[in-house]
Length: 268
Image 1: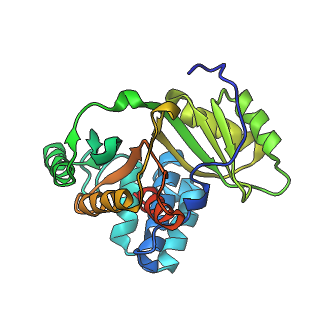
Image 2: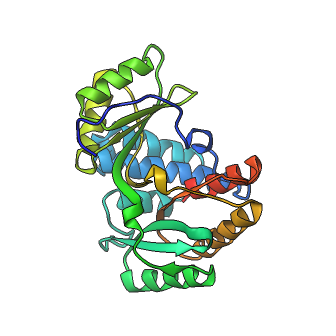
């Protein structure tokens, strides 16, 4: 992929699950996860001092009004700086694995104990019937920035601004929001350029593992979905999950089962 790759506009493949945290999560857990995300992102973008960061101050105020514990707010601010709540530097741990049905997964965690996290994740993979093995060649590393839509800003305007910022791809969502993919090294600069040009709020910003299209594996049915859900249950026992990326597609799985699975994946 080069900076001259053609831009395209179309539905985001994760648009329908963006705000759905899964039917098994409580409303309070969903709300706190959202507040934590907003606080961490605001800190990452503009710094940890609320007095100098209006976006962070607003996010903290909303969290407090929703009775989010101070410890949770402090932990989110710390995570936005790449440290734990105790001040220990967090390390990103990436684990690649092949699960049953030839589903490749890449998992990312932030942890202050690398060996413990690696052991816990590998144990979950083994219990799920998979094995740790290199699968990164089935994915492409990309920066991903989600923008909240704004009245008067068209998809074409986002496309033009993204092109000017050197983006690789643009996906427009039904609700007017937009997802921009970039070279990993250009993620923050492209996000800020587009945000400034169109006065759009940055809703999320991360580096992702995007599965290569011709390596995608269709699931055989709902049993395959159930197996992946059990794997997610096991991962729930490991703290610090930041993302799970897989090369599975819906295949013969029911719409509802697939949507529920995608919601759980998106909530990591």
